[in-house]
Image (cartoon, rainbow, N blue to C red; front, top):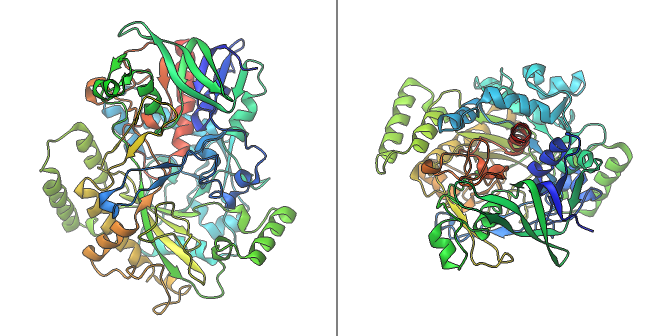
Amino acid sequence: MSPTAADYVIVGGGTAGLVLAARLSEDPGTSVVVLEAGTDHLEDPRVNIPALWTTLFGTDADWAFTTVPQPTLGDRSINAAQGKLLGGSSAINGQTFVSASKAVVDAWSKLGNEGWTWENLQPYYKKSYTLNLPDDETCEHLGLNWVDPSVHGSSGPIQVSFPGQVQNPLVRAWTEIFKSIDYNTTLDPYSGVSIGGFSSLAAVDPQTKTRSYAASAYGHTAMQCPGVHVVTDAFVKKVLLEGARPNIRATGVEVDVKGQLITVKANKEVIITAGALNTPKLLELSGIGSKEILEKYNIPVVIDNPNVGENLQDHLMSGISFEVVDSVITGDQLLRQEPEAIQSAMQMYSEHKAGPMTIGGVQSSALMPILEFTSPDGQKAQKALFDRLLSTEPSTAFQTVVRGILETQNEPTCDMFMFLAQANLHETNTSCFVGTQLLPGNYLSLGIMQSTPFSRGHVHISSANPNDKQTIDPRYLSHPLDIEILARNLLDVERLHENEALAKYLKSPDGRRNHSDAFLTDLESAKKYLHDTLTTAYHFSGTAAMLPEDQRGVVSEKLVVHGTVNLRVCDASIFPIIPPANLMATVYAVAERAADIIKADA
């Protein structure tokens, strides 16, 4: 039987929601209800085996959202996978574990969020995870001389490790490339101020070689507490509100639990942790949002805030796949689902917890600027480009801050990465980077993921029916600077394959590439290729931004929805500016800090 009341009602049992449940329940006598629309997949091998991370896309464990057609991407509608299961997207992503940069987090504070600085957030990164270093031989192979244990967690619930294999020469080649161009990482990337190439961490337990994620790490702990009730197959339809601004109170939620509509009352707070695509939908269904949108669907207006659902940000990604020499083993045979390769890999995993099944998404990353803009003349050219393309519209605090970040020499414009298989880079691609229309042979993919886009989109309800999907429009490349930055990043990646450290492993110059237009010669060819091949990194954020309300905000620096006293939001929707690279580690850190904020207010 589902509980009908609790001190804290948490809407969404995902990456942030389970952190809050675990931490809030540390106080004796506190009761917590977590309402998760999906189901429990704790024993599901598709979740637990790192290499199977894309197999839940498009299943009932995925919300399976789709954007509206994007005119800048050849009118493609992009599939927007988001986890609909206990653990949320931490259960279905590629496990990459990367912190935000100091510049971006400090920018949150500059935009009006007192206390949200890198100095204050870094301890919460450390609190969320435990760093597990490999043996000395693997450390040497992966070039881990940059690791600074003082900036990493040593006792947190999430287990992170370096899943690279010593026998794969490409991982070593990656670090050699960046040494040769003077972009070898010397400062730990998790210190918030690093730039250059490195082997990246993954949320994989090195002992069990299984995914370490919100449900297995935080959720397991929370569910042992007598005051915590985690309810799955529980679809929240709206938050119940009473009173008037500025003292509107959330009294509970209306939720469909396995087909039965019930009310769960909140003695203290309702906390929405539904993710950047679902959180604004729930706010609007509850009467918080643009008056124009709410009245269109005959929803009573409780709080008129047109910022709800706006400021949608995402990382776009693309890349080039190069055919490798026959002696190099990649993941292409597994992606092509060749029976012998799958059988061999599963046998290695089940018997020895080794082999390709232990590796998820990206092993090798590089936080990089645009190389042509690093010289004194290049910096002048960058300034001229930014001046020209930003002068056509009124300046905003957001633009000023983002420009400052991108013009900082030790701040990346993109995350370059290496993926050990061919990528899904076709004009018909509406899904993910991982390949589907696969060529024969073995490939590696060199990719780019934009760090801090200027473009902003929105997500809004399409009706008053909670069962109807929301309208998602990221407005990719709607700001002209984004394609200019991405095209230059892609040309930098094109040049990497010529580097001696990598070239010896490629079938070059006659080796195949994944796409007939992947032989880039200039800025225009790079732009054309990007329009054809760019896709989402699934890093949706910003739609309930932590900003002052008159500065496009939805929640305060205490994550309280403006106009209310006890309704909070805690997920990637609160990020006013998207962090560079992957979001998961930052969501964990923000949730850890939010738990302390909530406890202090109790």
